[in-house]
Length: 352
Ligand SMILES: [Zn+2]
View 1: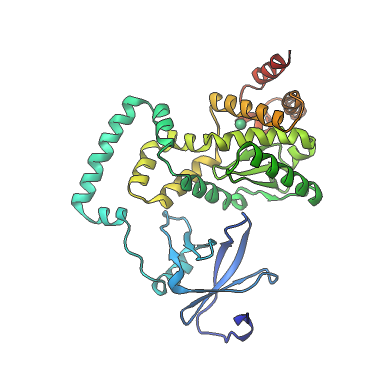
View 2: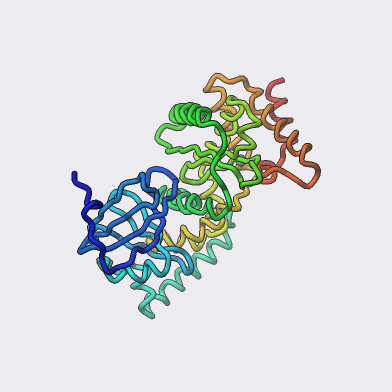
């Protein structure tokens, strides 16, 4: 295949900046876009990556939330995120997409009124049933594609949160990734998982681990350096428990019950997901969810042939870290994972 990159003639259209995700990894790439005839030319700023060409007719501009970047879906499963200026330049050249149900409804008074009545009825029902019950019931109705989308949106924000690349040796990262992938496939076949190592910031290695609803798990360097590989597997088993039980989405539904139902009804996931992403980043699970994830971790480590006290050893290291930092400086995982003493009692009790 001949790369058009070599033969590109300069055009009057200036190169427009955008962020590109290839749809396979969570890594973001800065790119420059140009339209040439009926083709979108995407040039990654990282020169080692290939220039790509997409027919304009195959591109699909998603819906954006106010002040959020616009998603542009690529035919190969990748996605571009466009700023307002880039969107304004590109949108007129892209195929016009039929307005979604949400747009059509909101354009008509009758439709808007009907929606309001439906939402009011849902509000009354939601109020009577209680948010928790509704969250559990609604979870089954919520397609997995929403978990995927919410996770991706949060991942795209890691840079904004100040997370930076891991300094953990590549060999250990590779070893842990392979080991966890195999263990997860055994424990939860068909559940997509991905393990990333990051630092919380340039200054702080971070003593934390967390999972996104799409199965993307992050372990910060500080935690990875303090724990053995076996102990990290216990932490990963716990995080996998949150993914399998969809605790993140339960949280989202508790906060956004009505809103997300409305979003699903109007098949307008992208806007709902963008708002949900804001909730996920400050994720705190309830006590019940933590117990479920702990129980999952116990089964997970047993399946891996690890001694049952592995999980207790992890809790003890968290307590040590807490002591080391002094009162008030609680590591992330402790603050988002309440009841550490109770858990130690449970672990020690279960081994007596
Ligand atoms: Zn947890």
